[in-house]
Length: 414
Ligand SMILES: *Cc1c(COP(=O)(O)O)cnc(C)c1O
Image (cartoon, rainbow, N blue to C red; front, side):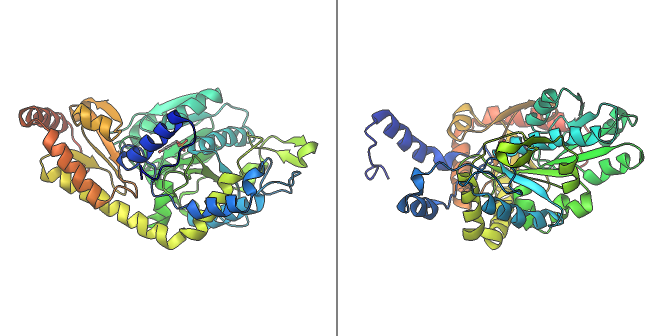
């Protein structure tokens, strides 16, 4: 790769480019698929001179936009591909290709607040587990609504009893489910929490699924019921495009129903021929084209294979770590393995996010097994870890961790 690297004329940029290519496949800590299949797209795009056009998907993808230079048609097709995967009624969707998972959460929470305000004069409360992605807490702050953080158990599940204690049934309930929490990769138990919500039929409710990572692969497995709107009756979902699907830059999808969309504040914007209900004005047309391309070139069958392979590799990583006596944990249907924190050199080399958790004896880190984390790379990683472990130190860590675990009644996975 190095010899064929073409110079830009800017040495510092070339240096950066080479470094990035060297690091790419050591990125094990963040949930981003590094197997990108967009080269043919870029070639088609540049070869045909489209690279001189400034495209923009300003406006609602479902209404006739004012500009000539959008890819709205392809945006609708992307959404129509995904709608049935989450069991939305194809005739009853509204959505868009977003800037990111956070952008989708932003719309989910904003739309949720407005929807609930259309049902009740009382201010809604947002409930989310303390293991969920921080964007949900940030976005509650942005909406200036009351946030009730529901404590999670050691494996990361929102605790139903705590939710019930915190629930104020006299006020509208905006609940965000973590469909894959950030650090421990846990899927909130929607059935249990929904059963509590069902005790208060008078309480207006809006459910948003934060499914940034897991919402990518679950639809392709036999566990797709977890993100089925028919089964779980949620109102909106956000999924990242660059996590599972192999987009090469931040993107995502947001889906909701027409009912929710129609309950939003209307701002009639004549110069866009539009009734603008979403937050962003200009949006990327190029990322829509790339997403559409991936659907055509990778598509359902390959994504299904990748989903299966990823979950198999996750088990393989867990077994490999256990085979060298290394303590680690994985939640069901998760591709995230969390482990006692490896030596600093390993944390830096593989970009492993860190956490501190008394319930596991202290220092932790995690690995997210995306498509590029193959069995060969797992073998190399585990060998690298093994040679960096100082046996006496590790034994001390293991004893402390096991003692901390024993002190609790962890029903699951032990
Ligand atoms: C990654 C992630 C987010 C943030 O998504 P971005 O696409 O990075 O904005 C939100 N929630 C969960 C559960 C995530 O895993």
